[in-house]
Length: 234
Image (cartoon, rainbow, N blue to C red; front, side, top):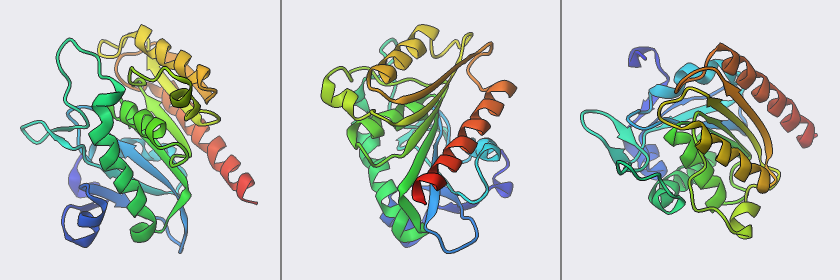
């Protein structure tokens, strides 16, 4: 996307130092506290990549997109380094999760984010990072939209699975995805069900992307979450 048409870039100053991550932010009108969506790009992306999905998010939400912590020259970024031939495990996301957790904790102070209403939406490796963060820090995240991604391997015991209990989750999978094999996506769905997440799982006849039906389903999921959030707060 054209950076000149994107929301405010924060890559220096006190807010950058306190949040710890380069990011773009779009703040709604009003004093808040704001329901918040943090959008996590995939491998070889950056803070610009996820803004095409902002169309599905209600306008009154605070929206942020941080840059991944792994430098992948030239001018590309990831959340973890991917070893060829090895599928990423939960342990490999520890550094990314720590950085993201610090970022989330700073949002109420600098952007008046509602700490009870922070959602993550990740694409591919960004989705895996979102799931890892929810597993390692139960209760910090209110819900997750995982787009053509996966739950990192290594979450097998009851304590790990318990972190997913009652967590609203939307998972979009491409049956023809050459990067995230369908069996990995289905294994992730099985794990989420075992953890008693409130799972909405969808498969589409597409590759490593979200097709039009996927966008419609994602928009409807956000609408439902937004309405449920407001009902819970009454």
